[in-house]
Length: 292
Image (cartoon, rainbow, N blue to C red; front, side, top):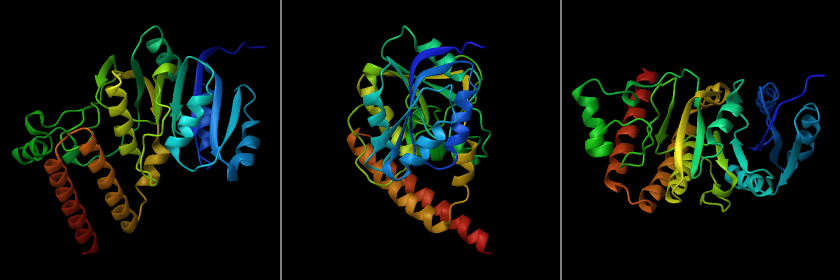
């Protein structure tokens, strides 16, 4: 019988109980090293369904925790509070771990204080050139409007409250100003266990930004480890299929959250309005073009 390799990590997954959690659990079960415990936090209406599905994964020490709220941040914090081990990995239910990801993150954070470490997303997603390194005067001006002299700056938070994606590196590690909340490993003593998110609606990238800025306020260094890899292709596919009505609704919600963040962390409210004015124009022009 093969002896399973386990590491002293509590892995916390908040979920609504949708089917893609099975792919997530399969990826954990196939990892080179397993967590000592896996906490799945699910609203009560899907508790029995997830409890039943968790029995399939006999190698994983799964605890299913009932949540009385359908709120990702609340559910994640509930899992943090019930975690037993000194290292905690937060993982979204639509993220899949690559083979040695969990082990690499643990080996990197072990023995270090005041850091949180996240893997690289290996998905190759098409991005508008406006979000890539500027190659002409117009794009450079755009990034100056968002972020003053720093301009385009991967892995940082712009003065307008926009969080730039990180550079496409494959090796080493680098300090970032924000990390995607889909997969982060922490020291237990560093996790945030108070509900810091003041809204009922969900905008993950803004939740991630707020979470990162609060961690940095606590003097936690945020590290991206490029040799550890995850995938979130399913989530990206779903986002690409949104209707125009939902896109506009999400845009308004995102603006409200970023405005809250910009005020809370004393960024530039003027640059925030510039960013959303340009963003709204781009959406309008895209819609007009598609209608022709």
